[in-house]
Amino acid sequence: MTNIQASGSPNSELNNGIEQIAEIVRESSYVVGMTGAGMSVESGIPPFRGVDGLWTKYGAPKMDGYSQFKKDPTGWWNRRTNEKIDDHIIELRDALATAEPHAGHYALAELEKIGSIRSLVTQNIDALDEKAGLENLIEIHGNRTKLRCIECGDRESLGDFVPLFAPDPCKKCDGLVKFDTVMFGEPIPSDVMASARAEIDKADCVLAIGTSATVRPASGLLWIAEASGATIIEINPTETKLTSICKVSLRSTAGEALPMLLQSLSA
View 1 (cartoon, rainbow, N blue to C red):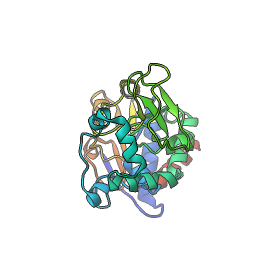
View 2: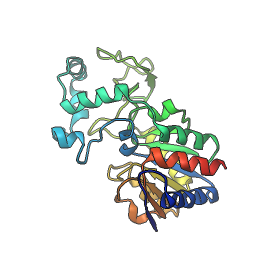
View 3: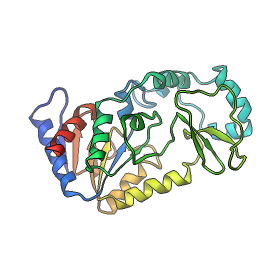
View 4: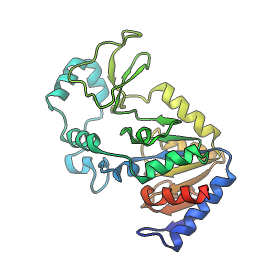
């Protein structure tokens, strides 16, 4: 395992790390990306955990959000409309409303376009990957700009529209409709989990970017990939639980490293 410390402006260590990653990607036949909260932080979206995390600031929320929603969905929507919800959700919602993709998002989209990565599994709900142009995208925790039927899984894109009242029942099955984002206590939708697992099973290299590798079941996919013989590469400013199984662990941000990786692979 190569652990390369790199930060700030480009330097020899960072360039060396990028070239090592580029060489592995070139030699791989099916590269899958996986992004976590660190990717969103660079767009001004606060994380939940850590020194500057929302839970550190406001306290961890109750873990039964999904069951409470199912008990009284209309009441849940009413509370949300009247901002009678947790302070950390209000701050997160405000940050999401103004966030834009950064250079790392756009570099990933270009890496997909040139075939260097085949797909991206993201733990983020901000829709910034989609906005940057990624197409083979699996949003394992959902997308804040969509509604989803919890019965049949049908999804509807909202764009910038924010519902003020509880949505009508699903047009396809008359099921209960909620935001696509996965709530605490809610299972990952089966279609999404199956798609993510299928991509991981095909991967001979996984590029993990800005993820602490602590949130399951998403993080478990990385260990499944490693156990199946895939090469794991990490781009993260800090050491994580994933570092010990990485072929290369580069200490850098996505916004700095990914455009450099794109330049190297485009040469």
